[in-house]
Length: 355
Image (tube, rainbow, N blue to C red; front, side, top):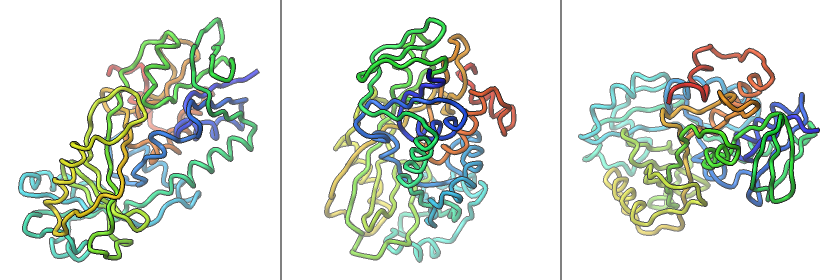
């Protein structure tokens, strides 16, 4: 007899499987051929304690200890940049925890390709770090397996019914348990509908990324991530290459996302205004989905109307950097323990809140 079925084998489902499998019999179901295929495998791979709303900030900062223990962080920093139209936003960014205004000369020393004629303000977040997503994710899957959890790929869910316990029909057979966890990312509302549960409004948004050669052949290993004050583009080093995202939020249906060439070109044009080095070649591109609840705060907790149906969805672009804290909180709620978070945070995450 299984105690908990987790639907969705990304960082949310994998981390929760690790967190609950020491105390329960767990099955983790992933529709794709591999775990972490969608949002987890296409993450920007950053830890930024200022990124997101207040709830996200709290969860991100609460996750720092776990990241240090797993040894998955390395120094990077984020350099926020503003042109004339964005300058009014810089005071608020600089007032955030862990950020400081720096001079334009200091910014140029960090990233020598910056177009100083266009840039009017700079703020540095030195606390931001690269995050080794694969190392973190694989460690969570190993922990789940070591605890006896059953981990299945190619297990797309085709039906769900409830008769006092939940029965989940998949491509590889049926699994039953009193508790199911909806950690299906972009497909979270679809899974709810299969279960006869009211959706909470999880909407996937596409975001595209281009891989470029290192600008001017420079050694960019120590450059910070660059982020426009309005988050209309970002750029960061990655294994000797230069990733530039158009940072779009285009609502789409749940899918295996791909980059929209026109949208990506527009984003590259926005980035181009901030640098002096011309883009001469794009070596590749891809897209991922960032899935949000209407208030842009994750839905974490038991459904108000469906017994044993637990939501762990809507992490948006913050799923990796909040995963240790969210999985610990979710495990506490599933087992009826008092979470190690302020009651307001728990209430703000509840799927029963008004959204």
